[in-house]
Image 1 (cartoon, rainbow, N blue to C red):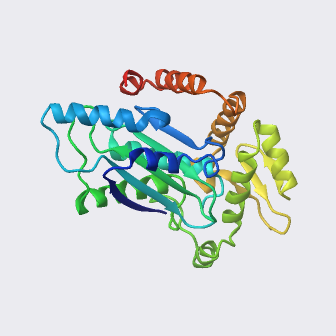
Image 2: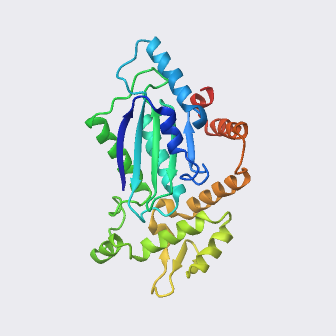
Image 3: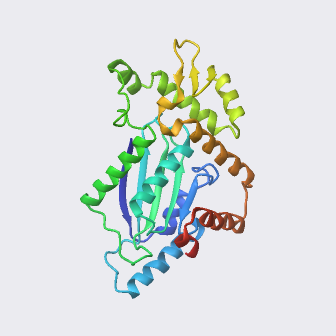
Length: 281
């Protein structure tokens, strides 16, 4: 489950963006992404959009941006790429493609957490975002739905078999077979670029592997195999392959890429994703 806080930024957009994109906190900025702007110039681009809003008499309130913090329970997510993907979906569902934003995932604490800074003024009709109880509850509902898709809630989604009382209590303590398997699967994917390498890492972690209609794993002292599809859609075999493909893509991009190279990658990703408004911006 994601815990969300949101507060306004009145005068320090650049300072806030610099903080959330700190290389020491974001795996050398590998866990930084943006929409409709570049992290390096976000404060200037936010200001340009805000000026258009003011020129169109849409200026309301004195917040330049909003800062949302999305935190997860310690041990709930072991792969920061998963946290970043969940936070991206929360950001996109909340802002609906209308606001520029910078998103980062911090790995310098004992729990993974994400920072989202988005422009208070949207670039579609120049209205400002209003933070109130009603909108906060909307964010929480969206967050709950997205977290449920990733198996982050303790109760299973509707339509799936519920946990037994014993398994539920073990899951809360992080001791269930499924909780341990999720942890090891995430860790193996994070450090692999191919499916064979992923399976090798799972063997090194002490799991017996069964490859039939569905991929299944069994720990050394476990009686029965655990089918990977019972962990949720995010751990299905096709999802694992997509996550490994992302790792291969990241491995091809130089870690010390220049601003122009990173900007080119960002622009081409907008084209690939069909994100016309982000590309135009």
